[in-house]
Image (cartoon, rainbow, N blue to C red; front, side):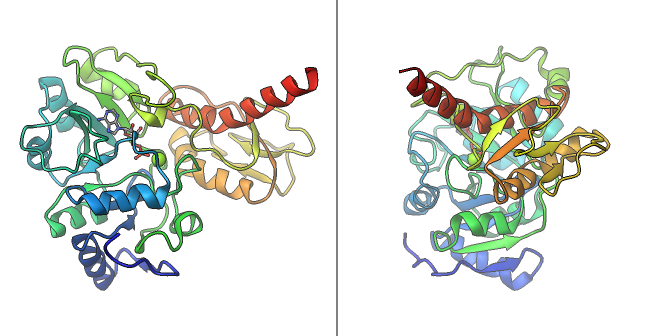
Length: 339
Ligand code: AMP
Ligand code: MG
């Protein structure tokens, strides 16, 4: 890291012009800044700057095979980085700026560090809606690589305090823009086979909206656990410390409960309702905050069934990965009991 790291990472308001100027100066010198986006908080750095990108991997303790999403502020800038097929262009025109990431072949002149792409010939690119992030791209004049601003494998951050808890002292600055409105990461579509777009990760743009443009999307299985085609697919991800049990309508007395809908019978203090009115957009926006809060209170979290429609696919994807750790621990425990 080129800039020395602070002992205590400052949190400044994303609407303070001085804080934005500080962020631009830090990014221009190869530092990293946590930035609010419409999906989750991202940890931004100059995508061309090798040491800056290395600093982001180090801060997150992220495996080097897991490439980063590169953020731009226009379709024109995206097209300097990737060759978008006609379906890719149609998707970009329909959903950018917004929570959609497109994976496409890198252009010959794409100036992005090979650390950010994990040395792949393809690149993941997004034009986000976040005014803070697009302002920074413009002001720095470079595409910004930005994975989620949390330690690799842990629950994603949707509040500035989640970032501080996970990465204090490992990054240069946190810009606080309040809660992230979408609350789950971007949807990732691979256009590497231009005739057969693949849904690599469900996210903030629901499948049904994308399919109006692409036709039916395939959902590619990960190639392997050590180098998946989209490591957000790796089985253990988004994991709280507590054990999790999914699709639970009646939690046990010792379990905290992540609910969805009216639950008049549940009265205890370790109850977080994702959406009283069963609104999936509200549930997505609350998901990671609910997991962070319950994880600080308990060792056992039971989760209500969530419908698979619309944003439910992304919510269930995150919940299954978050619970995968608990399932493997139970398998080990029952294996050792039967041994
Ligand atoms: P995160 O930044 O942690 O939200 O995750 C970014 C996601 O983008 C990860 O799942 C990466 O695997 C995925 N990604 C980035 N670049 C590529 C690429 N070239 N091909 C496939 N997936 C990618
Ligand atoms: Mg992440």
